[in-house]
Image (spheres, one colour):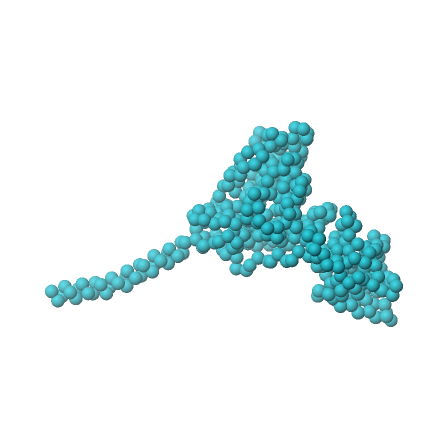
Length: 414
């Protein structure tokens, strides 16, 4: 009897650690298998794309829009690239442009017919029967092929998209947010401000004041899948966060922020990593505007017209030989918060602004920027005892300088 009690006792002693080990092992396996708990507003990395340059790909940062036990709804945190909504023309007649059918037109503003849909998803649209409008194979040259491995793309769920006007349905893995989705996830105007990657900035269509200004202020307004009355147009969000009233011509390039839904169960957390660093904050919306020939420098938000007048310059700016001339000391010190020194004997002007050094001489077209020689279209001059120099001589010290022909103003983004 005593022997049986001892044996039972030993069995319990030996079994206990085994049970503990098994329990711990199971807990560790469960912990490893459980997907990370992501919440709306958090950020994850998934896939890779060009961002800082066109030479190296980096992990894409996505904003979590919605999350449940089956899927994650993601939107790229930044504009990743610029592209037309649709860039393949076909025979066009406005009266027969497909208002009822929803397709057709010289360029198509319909999601199903768009080249951006084909590019995001790597669709072979060369079949003239299925895709008479496009006729191009995007399987090897696409966002899908560039940004994801086959394994990663397999984690992306198909999403059914419905054209609100034509009721046509498509099933896509990569897509653009619709107008109602934008209003739901980004109800405030300021919520819709977005930054661009360096790679996408280098794709800016410089020929248009509208693009140039909106891009440099807050990035391009991304395309959305919401429809417009004219199939030649697609919905656009402007840099200010407002919806563009008429939409944009679909053959022109705007910013692209892909959206997708990940299969939570299939991913099981293996392909998802929480962003270790928070994304770049969207800076305050600010610009400096003035009209050459007037003493009216102002700083603030031109979209809300919340502008604060700066101290008047001592001499008016003007345009000479196609160059906007500004008073050097006023512009560098009062407007850009830099420092200026002048040597009367050599007529040398040196300005230090935001880590840059600008050296020029009166009446000389040659200057140096951080030691590198540059040539000015119009040499610096003296007027009423004040030195004036071309505004664009200081372009490297600001984000952008843009001429706005509609208002005859100059816009400067610090």
